[in-house]
Length: 483
Image (cartoon, rainbow, N blue to C red; front, side, top):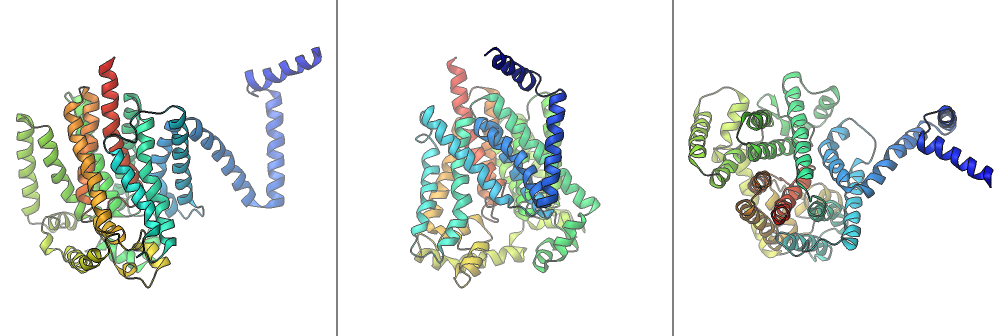
């Protein structure tokens, strides 16, 4: 018995106290390396890659389960870099990894909500409308006009789970410190994206990016305009890139405070994001800056803001009217002259052509009926050949005017709640966060008309994060006020 206890004490000392930072640890590591080398030789390189992936995945999955706030940060980072890694030619189902990350967070939330329920999380504010939107997406499987159930299955994987992330964010984002961390992470990722876009503009695309662009005539027609490539940075396309830069701009605008220590860094990041966004060539994003500033001036109305607003209006008017041969500036100017834009007129004509279909199909033609999944699973259907070119048009086509009404109601209630919470919240820092998220929802709502603002990562994740932070800032402020 004494020997057994002595052996237990020795193992505890070697493994737990010394953490194998000893001769025994070196011997164990040498044995594992030799065994792994032997297995790679026998079973091939794939086994080695799978083994390494497992070594990385196991601790990450453990942290996702035990540290959900860490999981939220990983999800946001993965959303930003998903298409960057896909463009590198990595033969791995990264989209499935994103699905798995969201499912782990959602299952963990449901489990914790059962053990430690947070009151009113499903009944207050925007939550009711988020639930209605989620349930409606699920019920689309029974849509009698749907041309394909498989299209619904592939689409609802992301649409449904991404929507439910709202509750994950509301549950776990429960402190000023964590909101501060998320904001810093968001802005850091936006800065990386902005700098990479400038690299693409001034130093050119990487060989793999150029090879991908040159191999697809459709991409060339969409991205090579007037002798100039539109930039997309680390994202899937220029639209997602530009809209994320707009979000970062308004995030900075909400954070700007008195004193150069807060004013200077956020102002520099905001200018960097706007400058890089110009090279995306996305007209819809150009309009969002002045549109969002209007709401900002209303919320922060005072003498200084009025002066700044008048100055910004003069600068904008000069930029729109000034003669130029610069293709980037010219494309910026055309964003404010939609009647002269051939692509805008095509969108208007497509929307007019779709109106009778929407009126005769109140529940739409089925989730996933347009775009890639429509072409893949229902190539002969009416919607499969229809280019949505707008977030609202896609919703109306796939989920009918009923779905469009529900989404519009959810978005309206989110912005309304954000404005109300902004004037109710007493804590200045939380008030700034609330205003920034309200501005982001507002510009994404406008941006969903000319483009599909909420289809791709990370925009869809950030949309529900912004909506959740509007609720969380109020909850945290009430907790602070009651202390």
